[in-house]
Length: 145
Image 1 (cartoon, helix red, strand yellow):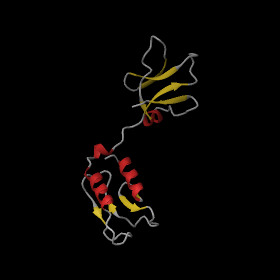
Image 2: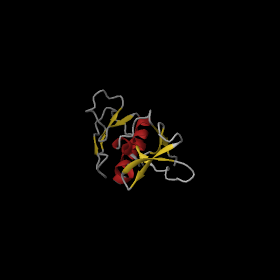
Image 3: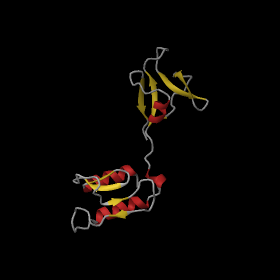
Image 4: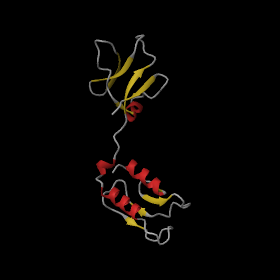
């Protein structure tokens, strides 16, 4: 189960998750928690059986937390969103794309019928790392799954 799925399902039940603590959305004090389940540790759960929901046992919440805790760490991560990057203010006067050469060096490449290298995919983190995050110059085009 992905962490994002876990958080969404918790919200439906009225709970929040901060990466370690599961607490009821209605709790004003984050120190009041229902369960501790670390997003970076598999199989560990610490339950607070005296939480503010009184004597009610929530089987759906119990099963959800157990399912998430048993998920291997690598399977909890969402795939990063990928982008092609179009150069809006290119010097070629036609559609240009960000192109990766020799593994990590970034160069601009005009796309045309002879050049098909424009379909290189980038994560948002890579774009920021290389300084290509100015959306007035570089248009991020999401890659569809």
